Image 1 (cartoon, rainbow, N blue to C red):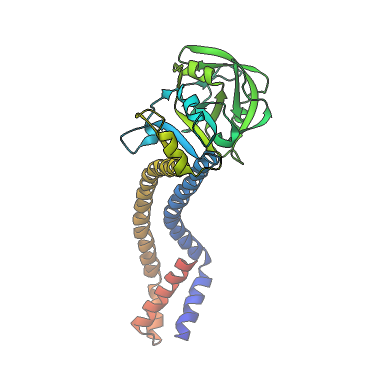
Image 2: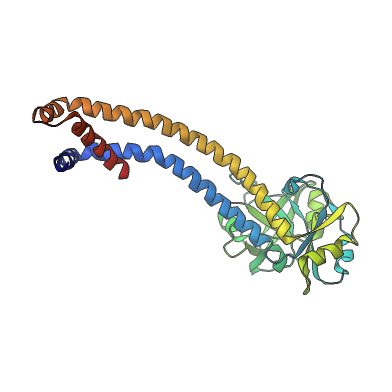
Length: 325
């Protein structure tokens, strides 16, 4: 066996380029599979972080009651008048309206619409940072009509300037707005390439044609556990509206993002498995060719007394070293 090990080591040392190229072929076959898992897992952690940051200060959320599980895909507004009703419930410290839309498109300094690669352009009403996850970095919050904020990464990426006026296109056409503040989402503004805009509630309602409507109410409690607070709110809101705890909201949003990422990951994994399948034949054929080129060497080893098993063991050991590397 010692002689077989020495022979394998000499073969590898004598053909360094062949060894490196063969190892590279194996590496390329496997790396596609690995990268598919790494990419989808990384995206999953990013979106999980976004969900957790956006609901960090939330105890209860009031929203439309839907009869199917895909809550994140249901754009059902509720009446703005529910804000005062919820705010009066015992144990409610803060009741902030929530409005979200992808119908507003900002135009840059050249008058061209802002574009993203796959990520959305989201518009919100400005609300208390303790429940929204969106906080000011520079400037001020939108306090009157005609003002808006944008997240810091989008400002840099699209060359917006604090204090300048830009046109924003809603359902009624372009309107001039002043950029009064720069914001970040969570600690690192991890928004996966999305553009985040915020306005006064009246402005974002008008821009999207939904005056008097909101999509949810974020509630922060005052020393009351989430389940109790949700039950108290459920008792006063109409039947078509429900109050759910932040744990429910976080779990639903993670599941919704996870379902989309699973589809994306399975598509990538399918291509990866095809690449591995093809690579298997390429690597197998490569070793057959290499062994065919070494017929004289193998015949000489047999003539010196090596058994067929020892010759096979030497070739398999060489392949094992390639695989390990």
